[in-house]
Image (cartoon, rainbow, N blue to C red):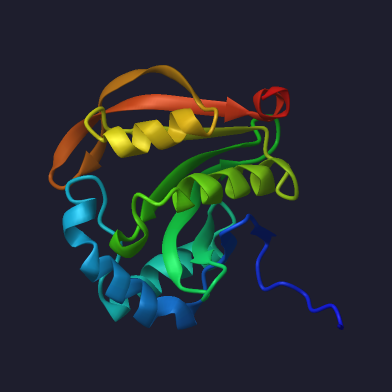
Amino acid sequence: MPHTASRYLAEGPRVGIRHFTYEDGPEFTARARESKDLHHPWLFPPATADAYTAYAGRLIEDPSKAGFLVCTLEDGAVAGFVNINNIVEGGFQCGALGYGAFAHAAGRGLMREALDLVVGHAFGPMRLHRLEINAQPGNVASIALARGCGFRREGFSPKMIYIDGEWRDHERWAITAEMRTCS
């Protein structure tokens, strides 16, 4: 049987991660609309074609960002996303993670697998040293995901990020390349 290259940057047992494309817009926005209740009040992924084009464009074209779609290996369906924002190179080699599962995939452990793949990709081919997650204290699922993937809580920042019309408190979580190799 001939070997075919995977369409994914990294694969786990159930999911693969790949970069965003403009062609993913219809599926992504449909999943975002289906997941509105799951995401509110934590995040607001683009739910229209124009909003997706702008969002994906930033992830595709801006070198300080890297966007990854989480896809199920069984059918290639988009299950969620993990983005690395605010990538700083040089002596810092750091980025800030943002992520979300879509409703049809939530609660199945797919995002934990995907986040682990993105962390591996960030510390491997991307050569980053540190990744951070900022999660609202009431977002129990997001904090559990950070903790489950080996991130440590580093602090609390009152009124840190402006979301849905208000400045929101956040817990700060982080992992370094050394922490990952030790776990």
